[in-house]
Length: 152
Length: 406
Image (tube, rainbow over the protein chains, first blue to last red):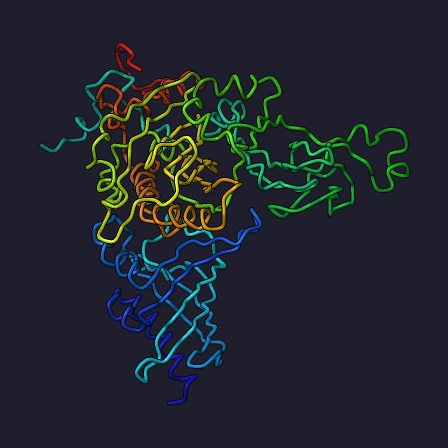
């Protein structure tokens, strides 16, 4: 398998793991010093905003605490399309993925487009395996109705 | 014991001030009346001064009474507001939510206005209107505008309303010191929810629903001082909630106390002030959150969420505030989704025709944190403004008068 295919599959696996709420599986795809960020530009206040910033450890905490919170249980489905993959530095690659997130209601199963965003990943290789090192999700969508507890 | 249809509709066994008829959340005609009697008479937050830093900067705002507004800083640096409606053919003047416009030019027929609302050019005016209609007849409709209470830009479409200072009265005293320095908006987003605006304001007016928030239960309700927090009601329907020390490290293993504080606020402090009819100042340890409720109908609401820090913040301090904000109040935060889900559920259960009848505000705990006096205070003002009791808004409930308890 070539590098582009391997990296693309890593990214797709990360979406599949979150779709299936397999958080340990998701975190296993990440390097120990994983950094995760959701950002958005607000034209209203003319500012780049950070909406969520986590390390691998704090993401684990977020996932572990989900059952303690009251959440919407609609299923999220992530449809990604890896646009670009390139070598960024020694043992570091970068990838740009277009991501659509759909929400499907439990009652009746109606599906609606929930969000669109671009995913900027940095990937490294550890023990001959590609791992997510850094992920920035740049939101296009900034309105989510009553929202969701699980990040994209 | 469950209840049959008759029992379900029976008046709750409380004084009339302690429950409301749920039609106040669903009735289309009542909503139109609220726009006229409440929103078009009240001071409403349109934006923050930090969103208009330079001359000619503007923001657009959908006023909850219905009028679309332009908020613009003039060449003289004064902030003014106008209807975002061209006096010619009623077109929108400024389409973008934000921008910089030395001249406000209607895209339709190029009528031009300055930032003081003066019409400065009517295209081919003389040829078309001769002397019958001139620029002096075509000024924009100005809306009263004041800046205050943390640098927020307040508007009132009623030319005869009392001043902002009179409207706010003593209600903001608790935050006076905390809001005395320049602030800056670092977060803004909107949520549209199928619910009534009052239900959102209710959520900000009672803390009994902390049972919904694991975060608040662990860091607040289980901690000393929580049940000492007190509500205070003020004239015009405003209310405040006193502070306590939130134990942020009690949320979960790995949680830490907040690294930055706020001038004049004790460590871990949390003060909340509800401004009638739908704005909330929520100063929680390191971040000020401002909610502005903009109803689109009886069961449809836009909420504008702003997060603010100090203008003097270092990059490190700002980063801490943003982090603190996002953990609980960001679009992916632990509490905001729960609160929105809660009012979404109320909107769903109380929608027109669902046979929901009463909403109870009956808790009395000496005005402390789980007392529902904050909501009772709001609905007393609502009833006064609407000249309709919230417990019998359409006059068909055939209730016996009881002693009002605010």
